[in-house]
Amino acid sequence: MGPNDGPGKSDRLLVEQGFPQARFAVIGEPTSLRPIRMHKGIIMEAIRVEGQSGHSSNPALGNNALEAMHLVLGDLLAYRSELQSRYQNPGFTVPVPTLNLGCIHGGDNPNRICGRCELHFDLRPLPGMNVDQLRADLRQRLVPIAQASGADIILHSLFAGIAPFEEPAQSELVTQLEALSGQRAESVSFATEAPFLQALGMQTVVLGQGSIDQAHQPNEFIPLDEVARSVDILEQLIRRYCLA
Image (cartoon, rainbow, N blue to C red; front, side, top):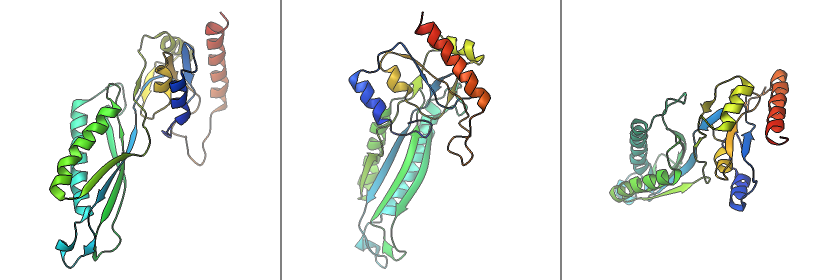
């Protein structure tokens, strides 16, 4: 699990079992050796609308799932605007939570009433926003749409999600890595396993060689000088915290 925002099942198991037990954690994701003390979380959700198929010559023969999904889409965009007006963090390049409509599938023929439609989307919350509350809000908002449309509307999660992460700016590990890297700690919008390790009581920072701009690209690379600098930073951390 890394900048591709994967599920991180192994990290959840570590937290459930209370391991590892340590004071500090450095997560080696591509940050160009800049310490990262904040990142957004992520949930990936699906909304399935179940209507009733039928011949399009008589709309009364069915209940068009695409029309109900149209109402869902409008409400999701309204919800996005509400979240963005309520939550801002100037420490992020994109200072508001985002909601992306990723893909949609529905229907099978232009002369057939669409009986089923499914939308997949992601939502990236800022630190201070609660993933479980966001899902509860979404479910609650779908109830009146289902009642108005007469369709069954179901929200289900595509994976468990990752909470947003924030390590205090004055924490010891942040200040140490700022000194060693010569760069001020910042934020990123991709998610990592940082909240899992932080939940075990560790001061946690994301720092590693390479840039997220090159990640998962055909010509992905890491500058060799960053590899050497990364080794030096880690060696100094080990000497300070493990050999003292």
